[in-house]
Image (cartoon, rainbow, N blue to C red; front, side, top):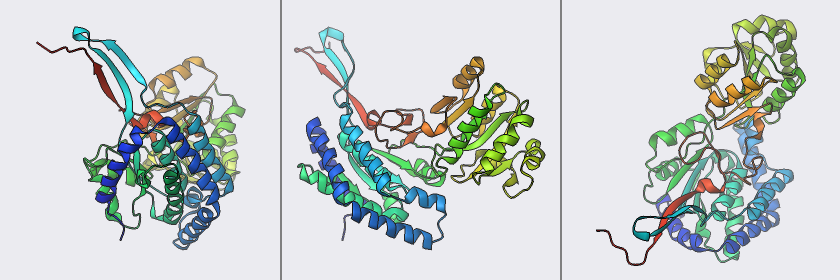
Length: 423
């Protein structure tokens, strides 16, 4: 019988001490061994993934979620490349954030140190397993990974390969452990493992994240759902607006940085919205539009096969599918008010040639990433030059936006004296 979560977390704490004391050379060697293991075990990993996909389809899982679950040789190449970039990244451990001499001549410095034991609860994306493991090892943290049940066979095959890589370089396999995804109680046990797990990161749908945030006794870094907006300002270039919108919505609609809502200035809607609607529908996107836009879009499309009337619930919805809400606004202030009311503080974009409008938008939108004339699809650790990411934080404490290496560190103060005592 396998260990329970408490036993796993205790073993991880022991392993974390060894890992935190290891050199950068050892940690990078572990990452290189992980790359080799993913190559050597590629056939077994892809076979496990095909079994997961077959089981998911038998349960009636929608194809957008299947896309998040699926692995192939190209995606595995991308996963290995992310680990390669982590190897090239500088070591954040020991980085001195500040230093000065304080009272009575004591020398003080604040340095980065590992968190210790990280727990992750996530859904249906086996690439997250490798990204999280790679960042944890690079930053000297042990990690407990509880993936979704849909990806159980894929994750188990991946973690088996990665654990072998760790032991090949002399590190404990307990640095990286899979938590039983078939048992719902295991997630609860992770949330209650105060004193054993140092930080918990949920990554998945709104229900999962809300459950962890509301019930965890362990400190949580909240990763957010992605109700991302593309706002077409009155001064937008029409070609640019279409290209950005189509990419943000359609390039990979099942991910958190895909656009879920189109906002457009009322003054340009009669001219531009029909064109944008046709471009989206040509890619099989369903439009949930406000009352001001319905007749305009209907006339442009000629039928209602891809057209719905939006309800209030649509403005805050993360579809993760080929669907988008459409709403007309009265200028940049109106757009910002709408986004700040319904957005999830993830990624927001404005398309405009008006510098003042762009500056107002970036200054006033409450989000972890704000774009001017670019697609929201760039909110990604790799795209930001962070290597792999462990999630995208939408909170405002400690880490915000794509979480790379520094997000999995804490700090300690080191003080060096020569016999000083306080009077």
